[in-house]
Length: 286
Image (cartoon, rainbow, N blue to C red; front, side, top):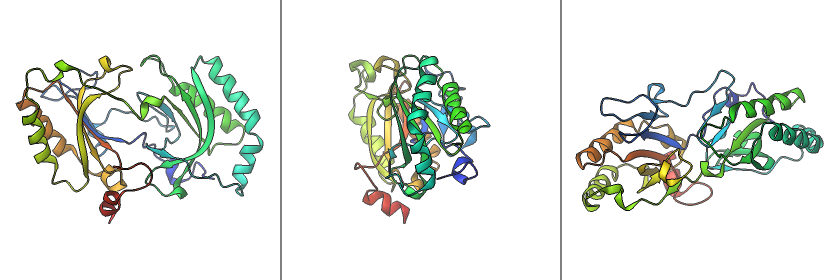
């Protein structure tokens, strides 16, 4: 079992799936650049708005927890039943679950399931899995704070001598936030021209998987989520750490030229097949 002194507990990467982003010009509470768009990037602290607290806890649009959240998409390797830490927590699991349930009810959280797993990113070594109490809940409002609930659950676990177990409260929407485009999303702009230009711009990138136009964002419904160009790149660690800002801003410039400044740009890590690494991930790793 991991301990808080483990390197994986020293920095909370958050979901880490959304690598690089630029908002539409007319949306977003975050500081905007000269062109009216807000920007974020995992590769730059100057280009980031997900604030991680000193204790490692983080609040995202559809997820909160700490001291370390496993990056998405998550796989759950088999629990090591011969591990002393596993035996200890499972011996206390039923009582622990009851008391965690009481905390969630007292805080008014609309939750559906509590489970205990080892969590690790789908393309990561299972040796780096994080023991985690996973709480599936429903986010009814973006103003509904989950981070303090996660802290309270973790404080309880630590008081029962389980400081090496992380807490992950998540809405199922954190892994699937795509909605169909509306007919008016492209105004009178023909599809073919921007699509062909973007394809020519992105195709030379080795990590490129595909791209799509959809409504994607922090909203609970499609009306709250802006039209977005989603660029899918392979989910290898090398790809997730790459600085995609230059290519993002070239795409932003191209969209602006076609009168599509209301379309956001998002680079996201997504393997072209479900489960494990694909050939593209393996090639990029080499």
